[in-house]
Length: 363
Image 1 (spheres, helix red, strand yellow):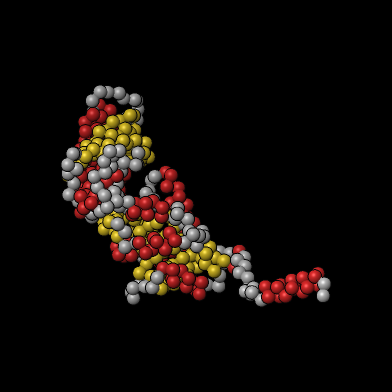
Image 2 (cartoon, helix red, strand yellow):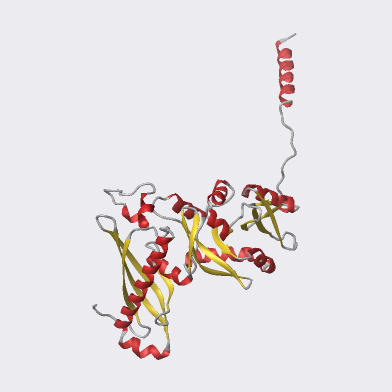
């Protein structure tokens, strides 16, 4: 037998064995008509300590929108069971917003957050929010309004405009893993079957410890060192509205780190006020500035006391203990120090525009 014949036979035998090593499977063809991308999740606990996941199935080929839900001991198990309740595969690649029931947030969010973080199909810009009330009933009554898309676009808009505080998965985890601050999330309530923005949910590590009202949320923004612009700022004590307020926050610690001085400078335009106050504002704006300063200082002190009782440094004050030459707090030592700090808070208010003419003065 010639060499070429032996080589040909050997090659055929090898090919025969190689074909036997191939694992035959049914190809997974994810055609668009076979999947159901989900935009919104609502997560709540059940009476038997399971986790229930609720989502809205979007319309395909003019199909009627519907709500599907499932429950399991784990979040991943509940997500997988969604497919058993629908005739298409529920995909999370387009998941944009997750509402988490307040009861789960009080127990701790790490397991929930970690599950989303480990899923490569879910974006780090996933919006997170805490909700209190019957969210499922609200979703049922707003199905035809594309409420999932509306809520996502609303949060996306307010992330840049700043009228409503938003928080995504990336920044929540950044604060959670930091030794110098705690995370926070927007807080919503279901009132009269409507989803109402009600303030901020503040956390100690991953557990919700308290909530801030809308009034406290405005003071929170003024104190936060990274929030420097406020488009609309109501001042209830004077019945006026401030527009285009710019803030500069300075934080200084004493040598013993037992006391902290917080100085906030505000420059603002007078946007709206009662007609009867017009002459008083034009003639006595210096007194008005002092009145606003005193009011803000009192409200800020009350807010800080509330955060200390909640053991939550969601303002990130701890970041300012570090300098180029020293790092006095490591690990959990800052969070142990937070609740015993003495705060001295001062506001300096300046009107750039009284609504009629520019004003300049030396205070």
